[in-house]
Length: 249
Image (cartoon, rainbow, N blue to C red; front, side, top):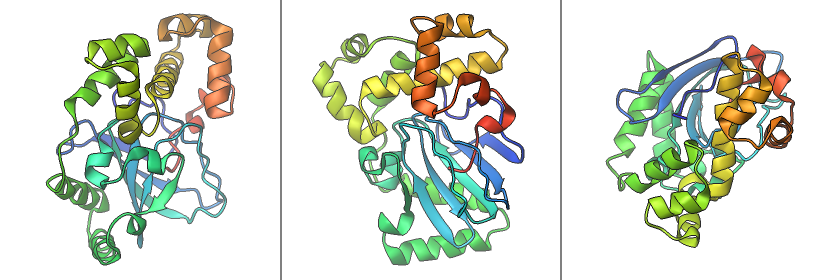
């Protein structure tokens, strides 16, 4: 599943494909003043985010992330990178950020981050300004390995880890070693996350749970239910409501 195919968004959330960052999606959302936030579900992606006075990064999730009551109200904008592409922009291996939200100043020069934060703060359109910041960083490091996109495509098509490794010309251990810095976890976990997103898209399109399970690649409906609960902490039915996804990263 391409970045951005997350099903029905929560109220106040908007996104669009980035014209300058291949595979990336840019999005915006207003934080709930009550402090209640929708869960952000694992999707294989990493995000660069801005809210006034702060730039930070959301690492790859292995479980649902629910913003706490301390989340400041205000506008948030972000860039959700396609799986495997964020480390080339951020300059940090994905596994070091797994299940974490980290201030950008902890990863880049503090002086540079202060300058960039002020730049986005002052912009008439912070979303476009943040997108430009990320685009400028693409010139500083190597481009993402095209092999990673092939790995994602094979796993998202429902192929197994061994079959995927063979298809891209790697051994299973080699694939695992390449996956950790790119995706934040091994190919087996990435396959589970991508399958979860496939199932959510199918269920939100109106398929029944049994058909969703079969089409998305689960052994049966019970397997679907267990995986959804394990990865998100919630039953599938709860995730089909509009507020069940697209929360703040």
